[in-house]
Length: 312
Length: 304
Image 1 (cartoon, chains in turn red, purple):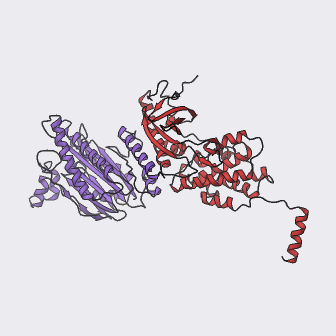
Image 2: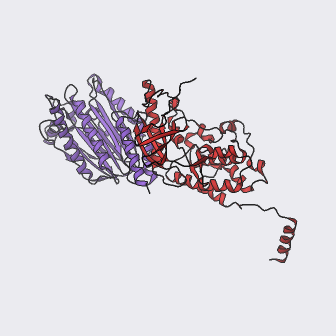
Image 3: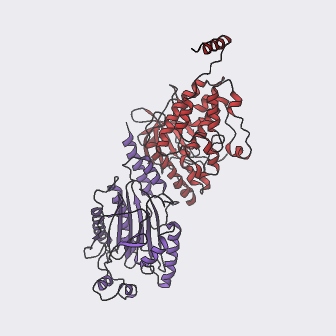
């Protein structure tokens, strides 16, 4: 079994927080549920890149070599970038940072703890198809959050269902900006960017100069696609070589409004310039959609015909 | 605030580099500082290091996001550095107080302010012409002023290394402060130590840098200057800034965040001690502490 970083144990006292349990483990961090001194739950993200084994026992993070330490410190810059970015954003649809501190020779970000589940879990759990109303509702709100993020000139760069959290009241929260700054570390192989196939835009694989709001638009489109399909669209790097992606319009015609499907296809264009160029443009396009396209009955059709003839 | 910045320090033919250079900036204010330490052993290096560090630290305390009085900031910081060097020498019972020259430039609101002690220089070049500079606190400069020697004789004069004002040492420093000098887009701001200016006159710098990307010609100039110094060559250092938006070639990420976030009270810093760009450098403990403090301040600020 490969050696992995040891998570902090339950009950561990970290600053004025008490660790409850590990919630998730990503490429760069471990996220814990913890309680503050008033008993309020918080989510604490511990910077601990999984590619660098730094803690096999105890609590203190130790680099095993000088090279590891360099990579570790370098990746920490990215963690700070995330903290910096999030600290400025106070929006109901973006995860809120409450505190940031240093301990155990690494750094921690404390975030508001949200109850609910990720959109990814929601997709996997559902037996029947997601309703158009649900998809619209989630993404319109999510895009409000993403717009706020872009207003601060920050790109998320890892929009996918697993990073979209649904509160119990159904409102979405955009999580995990960790990947956001990883593009800068391409010369550090051990901390190379980890993109999620299917959700990352083609320019994230090779054309870093072309990253922009449209890159997050691609991830948003791919996430909407996944809501409908329950699987991710074909990975963008494979699409560039040979595009097998069947358009949403073709797959779900009749089950969802044409406009929703057209918007998804629009977001998933390989050429960044052909996608909606801003979140606002995307929101406008979604808003323009007639919510439900009513099937006309024979009688209704006749009525319409009559009305048009008498010029009513 | 937009600018392109290049900085480099080279050892020349010396064993150690006693020059220290750094820049840092908040969203609204830029600080550039160079110090050339003097004296044998490690004294000079320590002196230059202390002066530069003190500038950076005080800047980060005071520029929130602007300095209330840039010239006073320069003067006060130099006086404090002078005092700090004295107490450092005391503390370690050094026979000789570490000493250093110092030039510091502040740009704030499109206006430059500077102060200097000793013979490290600041040049302000506009369209290839020298429009402002510092006047060395040196014996040879005095001789030039008295008409005893010509400016061209300075670099070969036997007393060319004698300066009468510095930070550290028995006498209080003479600190020259500039007037407020509005900048134009395209202006070149050059800070350099005598190791550079003595082998590379400002006219040549103007020719070299005025209409070329400083990030590629800067290193070229430094290599050439080092070669000219030969086997006797002194340490040589430069910070070159091209002011203005259109030539901005490698804006540091931090500036991006600052500018585009359109909020004011952050102090961001790209601290670079004696290395060229600092882009790929490890974080020091200080920088980690500072980054955390800065994030915490931001969290407080945007808390509902």
